[in-house]
Image 1 (cartoon, rainbow, N blue to C red):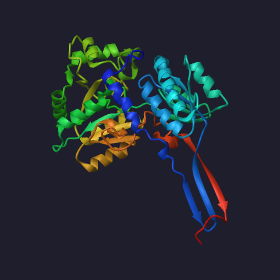
Image 2: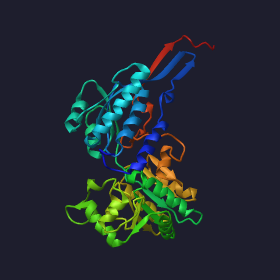
Image 3: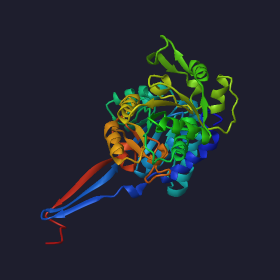
Image 4: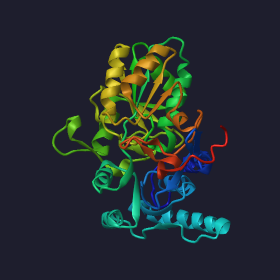
Length: 392
């Protein structure tokens, strides 16, 4: 945190604790077949040397998760971390190397670039000894990796919506807690985090009221406008299409954002919310700040349309709160996202409050989804003809 200076310090240990739910070698099970013509075995083999690009937003957790997955699959790794988190990345990698050496006797299975840059990334991508790339970063580096011709596992951008249905059976205080838990976690740095709320019909006022009861601070229009002018650069006008996120405010605390508008709030507040329309930059941009816009939809169909449009086809993550199973199904099919959470916070989709396992590399662009050790293997088949099929 002293190096990256983004996010909420109290939440950082929770992300690292989540690494215990990353899958290991137990997930790599060989598949055997036996029949009239002999036996066949399919086994997962390592790729060899993997180059991993890790983000500033989750430097050490992403590195830790990548190490567990990739080393479990039998690979070695060269990291090219975000320059803003290079020192803490080197520290974490050194700790993992020491642990690996103590357990196996293997030295320096993991390496990192001391001063990572675009040039070092390009050099690694062109190295003959590198067999695979794993990219957890922005669209620019993802595009570059896809053009190298090497096997690339790419975690792309996301702008996850949460849709609150007009459903009288919902516990709106729980809905609010879930949204704050997910969207407020580490000041909304999570790529799966709720980024915009779309509330249908009567659920709009119920959600607003519940959010306030659960500790969120509601901004008025003037306060929102003041913050918007600071955290977005409008280089070509004032429309949403011209909004460029000011990286200075990514992962900022709610009280720091509130001060922009002259508002003093408790440092323990985890979320700001503001009423907007569907075209607001806070809805349309992946802003990674604990300030969630809430948009009113007149009906479920309109709400789903807004949710789908604001996700921009990234196929990353989406959430819904409803007791109507048909609407859960409709949204799940329409959004076509890698992660879809019903009646829970976004983190439940990664096994934190829900079933399943976690990874901080979610390969949406290339389609592997939540990465596992199997993601970083190549399957090999060995066949013996007319022997060792002992049952006749």
